[in-house]
Amino acid sequence: MSASEKYVAAAYLVVFLAVLVWVAIIATKLARLSRDVDEIVELARRKAEHEQPEHERVKVS
Amino acid sequence: MLARLRNIPLPTLAYGTVVLMAAGLSLVFFYAPIDADQGLSQKIFYIHVPIALTAYACFAWGAAKAFLHLWKRTPGADLESYVAIHQGVIFGALTLVTGSIWARISWGIWWTWSSNQLVTFLILFLFYSAYFMLRYSVEPGPARANMCAVYALFGVVLIPVSWLSIRLANDFIHPTVFTSNGPQMSGSMFLAFCVSWAALLALAATMYRVELTGKRLDERLAELRELLA
Image (cartoon, rainbow over the protein chains, first blue to last red):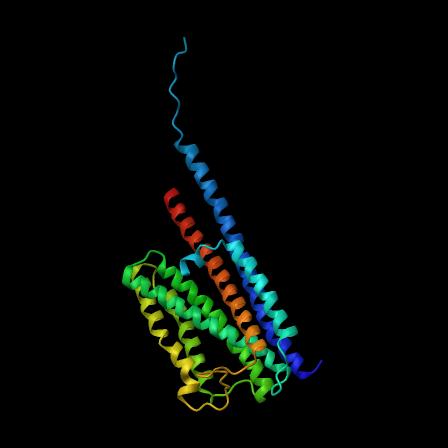
């Protein structure tokens, strides 16, 4: 491999690696967002259970 | 035109980027001829220059959104400006790295302070890197959005300065490919360059949309959490 070939490969690899790193960062953020959604769903479920009104008893003839 | 681009679904944009990238790389390595003067190392031109132009486009887009925020108070323009500048800094860093690699093989040095284009680009990059220090040192709110918008608008002045620096001063080190007589390269080289640039613009647009979607989701989730608390 000549010096020119090495430098050309390095330039293109740097860009490829940068895109890979960016994808990895976005994947981490996505995982955090997914955890946040789970947490909020759990919060909403608990709140719904607390706020559920007691049903009025009605005499059925 | 811009509205039509904005309506392209994200998956379509992402697949389009992959296709353009593949086409660009094929044209660069199998279609464009090897430069008679620089040899194989000239192939770095097809990635370095489009990345630099994409960085300029991202900074300009960020400044345009900042202007919209200040002028029309467009909702979300502050966040869009921030994301565009973030993309610009990523592409700016890649411009400096790929440029250094090209300089090493062409000029025998990694960096030179005697080239106006390099120095002005570095100033532009550092200016927009400092944008994040400003943004994260102020509490979120309208005041931060206004300050960041003004800062982003100041930086955009550096773009034409950086672009014209090699024409305004006699810079003999950094080559001038695009002159008033058109691009100084063969048709096949110019085609490879255009496709590479289109691929990098599509990549930047995809990254911008993905990051923006993530940030908006983050904001909505925070709002939802506050409502449920």
